[in-house]
Length: 194
Image 1 (cartoon, helix red, strand yellow):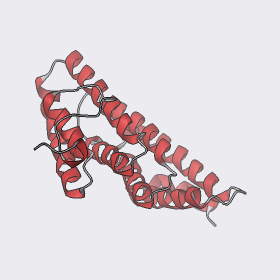
Image 2 (cartoon, rainbow, N blue to C red):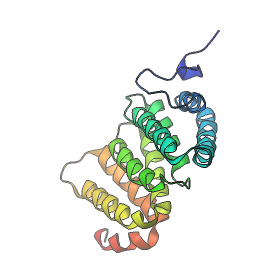
Image 3 (tube, helix red, strand yellow):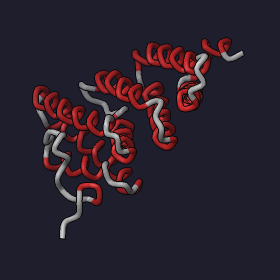
Image 4 (cartoon, rainbow, N blue to C red):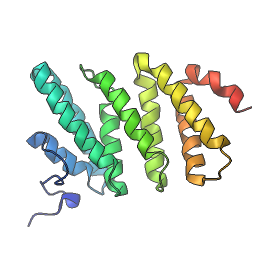
């Protein structure tokens, strides 16, 4: 008997376009409620993308990545925290893959993470902030802009007159990850804390 997609079945959700048989299975695994299954799918997705980058033509690989990004976005915007985490795991696994699409990953993933932070699930916010820190660490030429934007956004969240606790907690998490992963760039914002 086959399980549902959440339990490890083979069919991706109908809102997600098919990417490739191997990627589709990994996307289903990223939706699984088990962190161990998600982590394995994350590692396998990274290997798959690296392999496809070497084997596919530039145009075919761009199409593959476009479909994959659409699926990651569908996971991230899902109301289900497990799906959101699956999308976050996928982004974390792909952040530092070296391929023609690397700079696209940084920008696109930063935008996806902005849609997640803040949210009502503490675990999701913690993981999303860690991936944002990972982006800041490997962002290359985009790092300075990313750190600048996210630090200002987080400081605005902390200094807001509104006492929205999820926003404040997300801001603290983001600032912590930026400080840990891009300390030199983050140092410019230290006076705002004092």
